[in-house]
Length: 194
Image 1 (tube, helix red, strand yellow):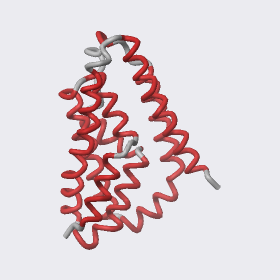
Image 2 (cartoon, one colour; image 1 turned 135 degrees about the vertical axis):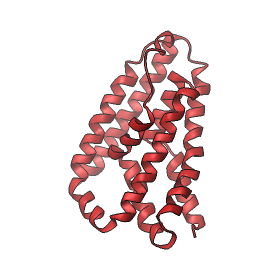
Image 3 (cartoon, helix red, strand yellow; image 1 turned 45 degrees about the vertical axis):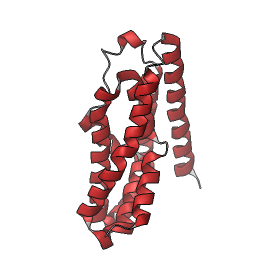
Image 4 (tube, one colour; image 1 turned 30 degrees about the horizontal axis):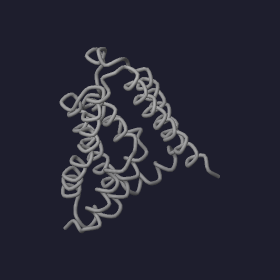
């Protein structure tokens, strides 16, 4: 049975800032809530699948993770840098119909290079899979994660209503892009630490 620490851990990890939540807020601002929904489900799906993979392959995964930590982090950082550039270069409000948020599949696959998602998945699998089983932890994760990330998408959607002026949207996108760049710096400092 899932215990209170599971609910607390997943909720805190899901609602605190990270690459997924920054991208959801940015997508909410630039595309609105309706167009951001597939991205939310993709994030939850990708993370739930990571938990299953981590739980099924925990011993070999931990060895594998240490071996690929640097390359995975560098790949994740490169992708986040590309996303930062795209966010920074996002156009004026009238150009949003041409752009698209990440799809369900794209956001699910993003979890492969998202270090925060791997940390969460590995910890959940390590701590809870033996006592609770894979399906309950995947279901419990999804039930907790989705409302948490919904908060970020809704905040972005609401904020987007106030950013209909090109310079305001540009300023917001610049701050979000710089936030992702700061995340990249933190990730690189952690992985390159002696």
